[in-house]
Image (cartoon, rainbow, N blue to C red; front, side, top):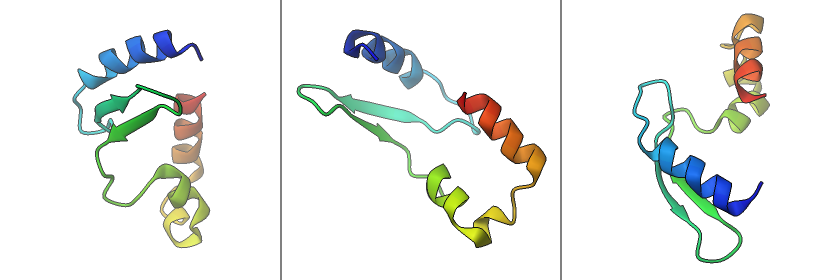
Length: 72
């Protein structure tokens, strides 16, 4: 992704505030790699949740399909 377009999108995302959206607080972009700073998720990242069998038990197929459709 073009860094300019990414920063434009990040500016929009910083303005979004919703209980079901992870808040974007800042973007560190002086040099590569570009880092993003987000709020801490109470149960960890989505990736760690999907990799952990105990946490994955709480996600049924409908929820997994919903997550996948939003990410794609």
